[in-house]
Length: 289
Image 1 (spheres, rainbow, N blue to C red):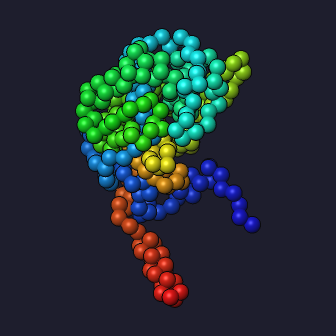
Image 2: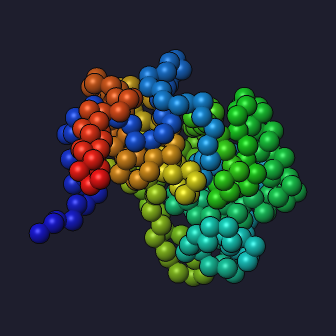
Image 3: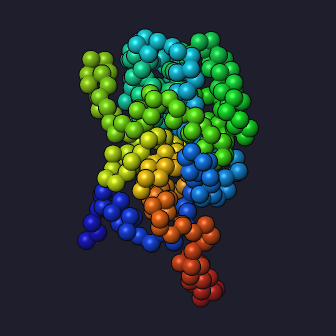
């Protein structure tokens, strides 16, 4: 009988696994906070879609605009995702404060909440895009294009180097730090309390000290992650882009934490195991001819 592996058991197995496994993410960048020293790097300059990592930028420009966080925002039909048809537990017609919209967009990565934040920005979508463009320029993110607030569009692109800049900037907002490190929250939707959870299940997990977090996923972007972590008294910011599975993204994060705490650096190149698998595949192909 095959036993179902829970997330907690997965973390325990991954934590004890040898760190020589190569990165599953296509782009990786880890810097030491304070010094900016690059600790690990893989394809950090490759420009790719960034999915919901976009929402950190959305949050920054909304907070910069100092809009009323208590103001109620109504979810309209135009906030519904018609590009990827992603689901949402925020129904059309719901009225939620801007502050709770920000909580939903960042913590549980709700696309309708993010879309509503962009739509109700001063000047509407045009005003939002102008503010984002200005913020990107101010942060020196020269390889970043963000056209909409959710990250659903594959035209929202960047590289790991620019995403580090965004993460460092976002960490200076106490509201973003607090929201993205909440493991769960209860939001009142149309008079009913609904529990929402963080999309990064490492938040709140045993042994993790996380100061900032944001996940992302679309088919084009793969599994993405931004985190600021503290381990063995050391602080680091990491960006993982385009992992093919959530488990690969989690293994990468675990390997990085082990490295920061004094373990062996994760391998960048293909592993021997992969080479052996390739040889076995070639042998099978020869036998089948």
